[in-house]
Image 1 (tube, one colour):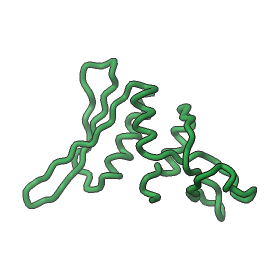
Image 2 (cartoon, rainbow, N blue to C red):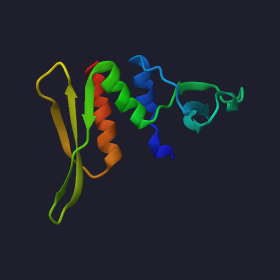
Image 3 (cartoon, rainbow, N blue to C red):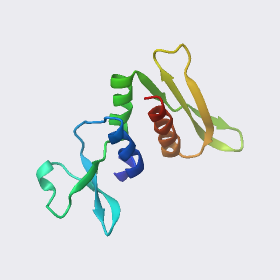
Image 4 (cartoon, one colour):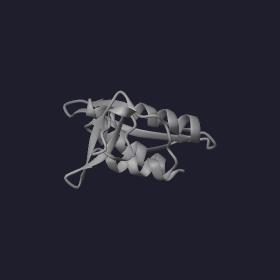
Length: 124
């Protein structure tokens, strides 16, 4: 289930860019390192688990870019004969005529998604 949430690094950048949505998780410090805590109710956190940054779902972030910043993120998939399946990244800011494509050789969906979000953050 942890794969549904953005990384701590991306969560920090989102907070700096004004992301403020209700989230099912958050990062708190555990042994001086950020750790993800998933919860169903805000009251589940004890005083010892003070959230340092919210942890949104990937889909929340994609929706936020689209709704708040008019940025579309998509991950086209392609298969190369004898090489496997690859994901690319495509970002389009709706005030522009064309989107920007980059990185078409990611073998992991989440790697391509993280790179897409990082690129989209640069546009706002």
